[in-house]
Amino acid sequence: MTIRVPLGVPFSAVALPDDLEHRVSALEREMAELRERIALANGDADAARVLAAGADRDVGEVRAELRAHTRALNALRETQVEFQQAQLGFGAELQAQRAELQEQRVELVALDGRVRDGFATMSAGMSEITRLLERIARGE
Image 1 (cartoon, rainbow, N blue to C red):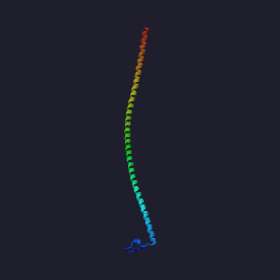
Image 2: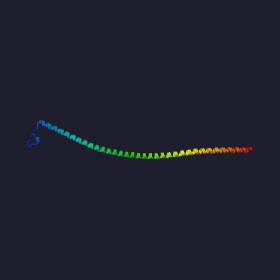
Image 3: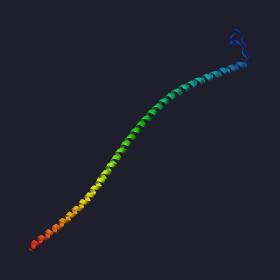
Image 4: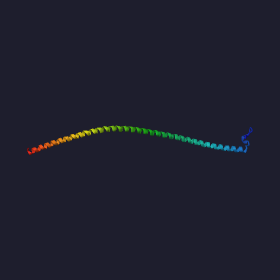
């Protein structure tokens, strides 16, 4: 249905059929609801931007902490590698000292044999001296 408004007559002055009035009212109500929804959506968008900015800041902080943890782990790794190298050096030194101790044991066993032989010789000599002194004492 088309409504023609004569020139010079305001649209509000034109009598509209009841159906058209009802439809215009419904459209006006719908427009008001849409405006409210747009206002709410704009508020939600603003809140989302604030949350996104906060999340971005939080992500930055987490990344900074992660970098700090990574640096700490790398420093710990370096310390462990140095400690391992020192242990390997101590192991080699301990091995050398063990070999030297073994050589000294061999020398000690040999020395013990010579000392026993020396005491045995001395004991035989003392026995001979004692026998001779007893002979002299008996007057032989």
